[in-house]
Image 1 (cartoon, rainbow, N blue to C red):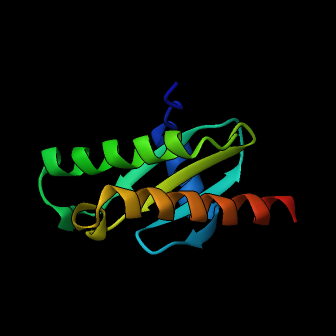
Image 2 (cartoon, rainbow, N blue to C red):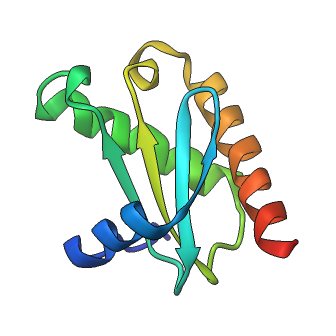
Length: 107
């Protein structure tokens, strides 16, 4: 099941107050929460159809990673590399960055 996205207020709160972990293709900003997952994209990617395509790719990579994010609210920030990189690299980057987030959370 696709995790629900945060409200605009919660999204902004996560973005401004959250801890950041940077990956090669995406960054994850997170706070303790209830499992909400948001995806933000750079406008440099292009118009809405292209940005939505990138969001769908990231959402699929998050689901494929299979991590339990019930205790975190996360925002994935994706730049222009989210369009040009193959899905396999994007998926691997999402997984390794999520591992960093979870190890930071458990420390």
